[in-house]
Image (cartoon, rainbow, N blue to C red):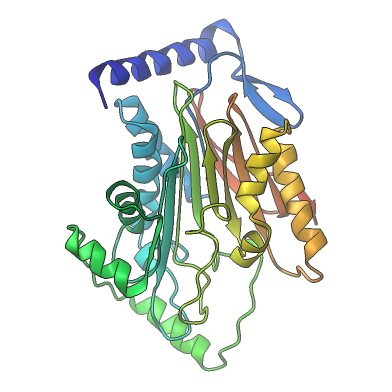
Length: 329
């Protein structure tokens, strides 16, 4: 990033802060269930669930220090990946039914460049490997042993981590080997993070350890561009969380962005994506899906399948934990 661009971002942050705290008396205007910033565009950061709060804080810090929005979305979720008390993201996540923690992640920028890794083991930051795939290869996705070998060849180091309480819970589960998802409980709660900087540039990231006790080899929506994450600077950015198969079948995040391209507000677009999931699936008992979106004009919002989806929102006015609107009780 050039010095001029860093300076411009800092000026943009300062200018937007002045608007939020002085000139306008409010951060934005409510339009169609979403919020549009009164003037300017960024910074805006949205991320899924309570664990988005520290991720957002790091992402805002990166932007305030002159980092790019791509740096912000990467380094934000790295905080969650390094939280080994988190049971749905990173090496602290619950294992699959064979006892292995397998990780998925993807990242995408304003211009649609994308990188992804799936079914990788023993790396602390799959999001950084995904970014390296985007920047160093002609490909979008690397998986499994091939992705691991490529990561080692490109300077990433393995990290062996065994958590006694996680292993004990897995052994107890293995006594019956029965899997049943429970809505809003962290057995499939990805962190997805989307952001817009002061210039209006967008980026997004998504990282997870996937469903607890999944079949060995299962990959969810989190590393799939268009399902767990989609960014198009012309239209907007969206990310998803919950039961990944539901987003894969409906290209959930891509659907949200395309609806915003057609003029829907972010909340309206997220709601329509959730409604499509409802229409396409006969039994959604105990299943949750949550969508977040930022439109290219600075509007933002979210929506969930059912009650209980929380998300972190950061603007120059601060960071707050929000509860999304929802379709099902």
